[in-house]
Length: 205
Image (tube, rainbow, N blue to C red; front, side, top):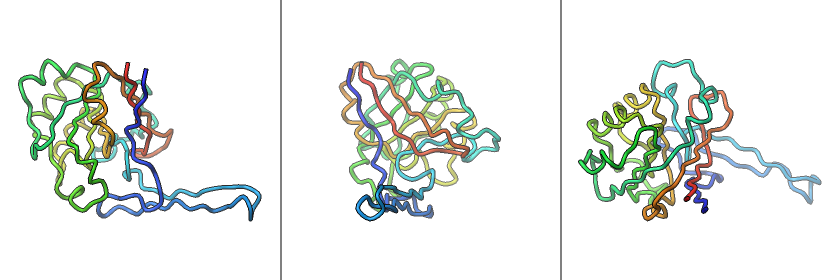
């Protein structure tokens, strides 16, 4: 068994989606001066690696902490979609993507995390492909980009309406390309919010 960390490190001034508040991680107490160490974190739930729940863009009363834990753990499926500005459904995907899986789309864009082009020039998922995800009843869509689409976010709304969660700003996905079988564990914080920062781990079996 091998564990692979798919989450970006949370640190001071973590790159944020345009318009979101900046992250501050401050060392508020120091051992030599205060006899103990402490840190304070001020972070938007959509900063760094995070997961969107329906409440983010859909009229829903359910906070992310209210969904069953099994909603965030499942068999992983990764597809290499590098150099595809629009990620479209292909015939071979229909056999590869199984019901209830956690689908990861690897674009390779994570290498540019924090750069302007990362947030403004990222690839998008085609609506036909998104509709297939709903039909196939996947649990989660995960990408190494800030979003699977752009305003007015039709893919977001379609997936979230169908209670398909969305993982954004993943990293290290290239290490899974040759994995025959792996499980994704994407547990959000036990937090009363629309979405959550989290530590995403792939367990290669």
